Image (cartoon, rainbow, N blue to C red; front, top):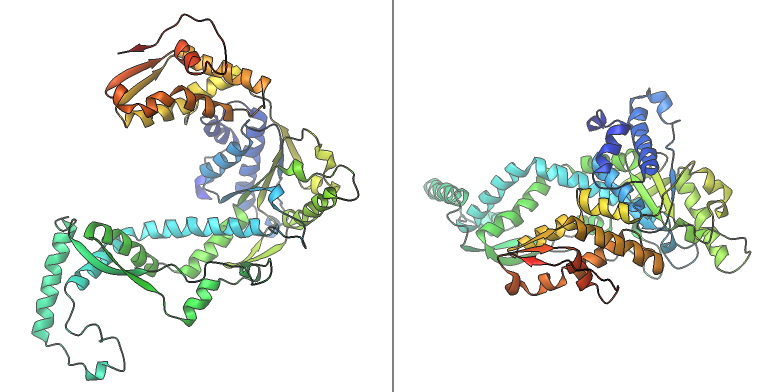
Length: 462
């Protein structure tokens, strides 16, 4: 949490502004909720458990930035993040995913993040160990294939010291050559860890997973049987990377990784529940609404705070931040059961996006589609430049299509720009080593099946 010291709410909003245009109210609310987590960790321990997160309910149509705000803020603070769809869950007793699986998914994300960090920390040492292992494969000791077998070792003659010393010297020479990259293209056969035999985690004949009982089935079987390996012939350069991963895992304390993962899931985790409006009951007492209300009641203890068993250990959900979102076109937030409504005290309404918003998204956002396509086409030595009037034309078309067909917000921009650059992406040889200026007419020409205009602009190929 120390990296949060300088991430005051205004700074969090400033960072979000680079990627998300508008929606100031939503960004402000989530920034305060994130900062409150840091404040809670600085409060005296006896009061810490009493401070619960203020969960957020985002109300707004698709494509206006609900998911992106939550996902981006998680990335900014380095928090484990999981997006789930409320409609994927069913009431206990029905076939489908149980709501506790979102906590197991979050813990899995946290575990992988911590593992990745730990592996990075031992990268240099693991690299050396991998090269050492390759040298041992290339220059094995005589009868080394039986030296570790306690039953056969008594019959294996000991290696004379001078032979051992000579092999060690040869290994040192190999290590130096490998480190200099002189053997990168040579092939070697190595043993690498094979995938686990058991990849299904369901209890046979049921809809229950072993995770629900806190059991890591692969770990259980690996303790009973030796790990499976398979032989692979690869270049030494690739062998180093494959063996480096295995060596790094040997250097890591996995109990420590599990402990840290659980702490992060509990104290930093963010779960984004999308389409929560789809499980809102509209007053019916039978049929689908019964199941919808059942899912809400199953969600309630998770959001209120409970303990969920995962394969990495028990996870308390009391301080996980839940962000729910929905369009609420048909239902209303008040159609949710009262207890669930109370668990989302902060409500923010996101506005529809217009052509001005689309223009800013394409022009000013850090990860704009215009920048992305320019970079993608540069790989093929096609240099694309979008003029301001082209970007404005795309924004206007997106707004018009959203108004006349299904309103999918900023997602409309993906389809439009893909269509605009389709010929450039396909006819690579025709445009290779050229600079292509895309202006308003070029945009309308490529989208003439969708729109009709009278514009006398032009496209120039320089």
